[in-house]
Image (cartoon, rainbow, N blue to C red; front, side):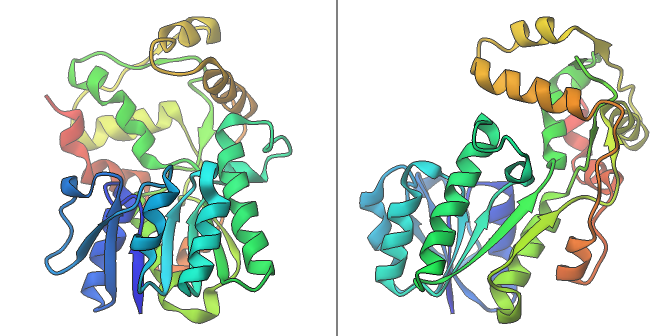
Length: 283
């Protein structure tokens, strides 16, 4: 079996490459900028830009399975080229946001939903099997606080008591490895969460304990927060995040045991993730 791993600069994909290599499964590391990749020795590198269908055919040559990031713009074209290349299985890194009632209108969820639908349509037509991984909040989202915490300040939070289900990127990669390597797990959608529902305040407290440094925060209004991100975040994305945080303010996130069911071990706690990334939060 040969697995094409798209987005190989990403934390999940790069971890997955290591898992595949350790298991003796041949992989091709793919990226828009392959020169920037540092895969395990012996792993082939190929250019695959998910926004450029002209790169698909070469990347898919000789491939049996694909780990795919959710780029909606050319998902149908990718599915068509994968079918032509004889791909048997595509694992999509989607998002739990697709399960929301307004997913099709939500800018955060819409691209994942469109990619899911394109792959599902191809699978229904017999092109290949499609598996959707739907993680909730990545623990790595906490890295957006790292600069402020390194400087001794805290992040400005409009909804500090909004809950999330932070999941370690390695757990997502191990779930992907499981569905890629075990045929009986193919063809389903898997909702992945971390083992705890935690507010932003609780996550900061864990970071403080693990790093041995203060992890304060300030409270701002939604309008103030939105104004602070106008330089690098489109307004519709900011509005979608504020709506999500408001919906989960004071409301714990439902959890699943899917990571354990797929990998054989419980999902890693946020404290474990914090320990793995402690240096990111220290001066």
